Length: 136
Image 1 (cartoon, rainbow, N blue to C red):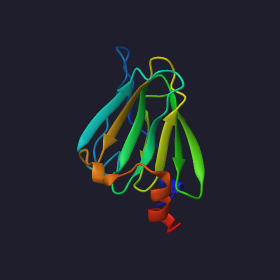
Image 2: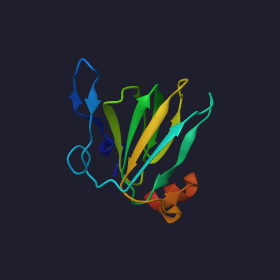
Image 3: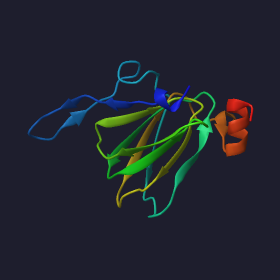
Image 4: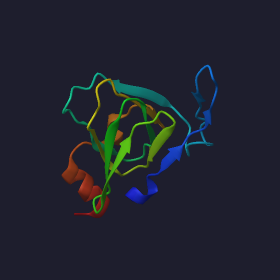
């Protein structure tokens, strides 16, 4: 997997004068079953989140409110993605190092995950991630 496998997903947006609605269906709008949902909020200015990679976990990251950046790194290439719409998701595949920063005031980051939390699935040390990824 490379950062090119991480894609922006335009989610369905149903316009209504009473307010818009967006929905996400597993294995339709995202290529996995949803086993866990979590969200980040009240992130202090200047703070970074993430700073890890997953061995097997797939995720969809959405800016539900406000904005933030996701930095994707496959050990060879890096890409910064700015998220600021609740109907746009960023699919992040396994074995991609990710960091989140540049949170606006009031930002809420929603994450849909393919598995329940399992510490064994994490690479929290970048050098260890690089060794696993490239034998470096």
